[in-house]
Length: 280
Image (cartoon, rainbow, N blue to C red; front, side, top):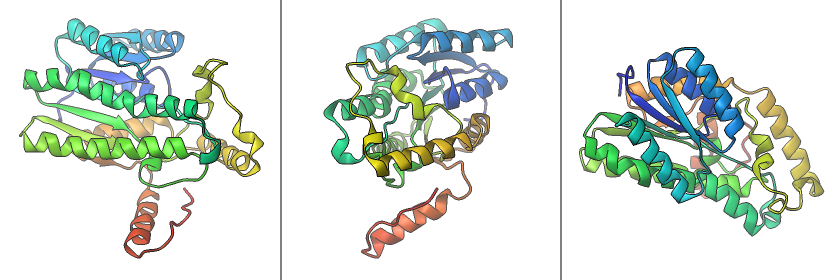
């Protein structure tokens, strides 16, 4: 998909961070936008900002873990614009805990947003995108945690590995059917976002024992926050994503050192070795 001007993009998790940067890049390329996020106030602010720059934009509050809300998103987007050409399932959350401290509620929350947010979107949008017969593209935001296994984020690792394999399978399904729709999986490393504060969207009843009670997890959590604060700007991730979509690239690794970690993991598997702790 090389021609973006006048096409329609739907982006989840679009109110801030990577999602907002993707929306800004899409608008700069002349795309029409339908945005979704769980934070309505920030979503409205982003929409207002983009409209001020001349973007044709609409949006709605959506909890992507809820299938019916993603169905509503698809209905509203197709009603508003008639077509969808670029679908970006970007919404994501995380919690920092060793696996033995990760509760059923933690698993439900993380998998609900990170994995089911993607699968709900694929089910809700792809049949209509395929039926339209237009050239298009589908992107899911995973992470380097979808290609590596980092300590103290078990649920996040699992959800992002699942996203990668879902998108790999989708790529094959689309290719086997000769579809005009491509697929990519976005796997950034550290990016300046507020993902470390994901639990701000959980209710008091959903919050569980904090990882800081585990000293190793607390230390790692602090290191993650520092790495995120010094990470890549979201706009740079967005530019890399659009360059990859234009070239039809499936794996989008935004950080120069990412492939060395993936190589180490593959060599561990092929060499029958325990996993190497990769420093991103």
